[in-house]
Amino acid sequence: MIIFLGDSLTEWCPFSTLFPNAEIQNYGIHGNTTVDVLKRIDVLKNKNADKLFLLLGINDLGNNYNSSFVADNYNKIIDELIVSNVADVFFLISVLPVNHNKWNKPGLVKSNIDLLNGLLMDIAKQRGFTFLDIACNFTDLNGDINNSLFTDGLHLNNLGYEVYSKSIKEFVCN
Image (cartoon, rainbow, N blue to C red; front, side):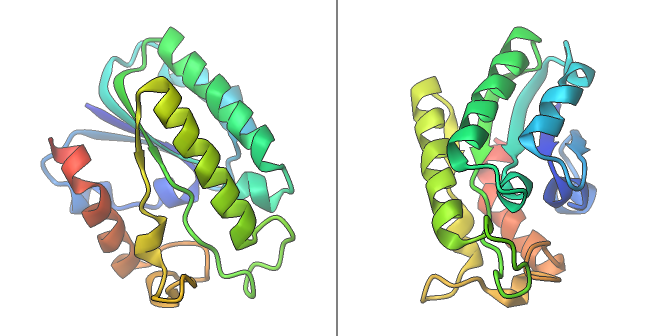
């Protein structure tokens, strides 16, 4: 069994269509921040999943939490997941780009997303986890968001979820 934990990008992912042969439990809730996940983490206790994929942080940045705060919460979440025997293997997924023109919030700028992704990569390295740096798959050649993959500059459309699934498929299916 595989657990996906996160926010709206996870909640609205059509996992059964993208990975029809995988047993996936979806614990994504739209609007969730790392603070919210820390509050609801008990529902995952003793799940004993083979793998857990974690994609969080964009709502934190949108609420003006700084990247260090988000990274600290990631570490707290991971500590709780390990102590609670939730999964054997953990994957951290990079925060995806956002169209700042459509989501005009001070925290949702490329530099903050890049900083957070760097911190998440460091956490993964320190803990021996795999960091799936897939954000570049959602940008154009100039490094700007590829709007054709998003419904509103933040949430993925069907094509975006196809790119997402291809980006993580080898880790989900192996």
